[in-house]
Length: 64
Image 1 (cartoon, rainbow, N blue to C red):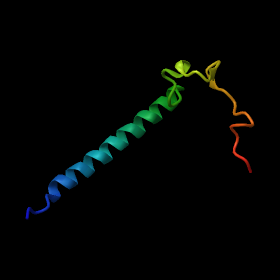
Image 2 (image 1 turned 135 degrees about the horizontal axis):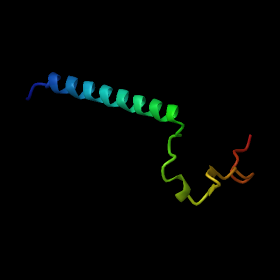
Image 3 (image 1 turned 90 degrees about the horizontal axis):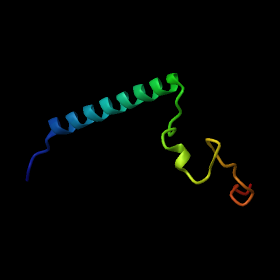
């Protein structure tokens, strides 16, 4: 039976942390620049009205 490669697992974990940190920094920079997540290509959505999503109707609203 093969032994576990702990070095590989550690490296993958470090890469995932680095990627997550970079994504957070990019999102923070985008927010500071005035962009919202998902702005690119937002007009292509069929339910978009004037750059905003259509409001939910009573049929779509969850019953309380």
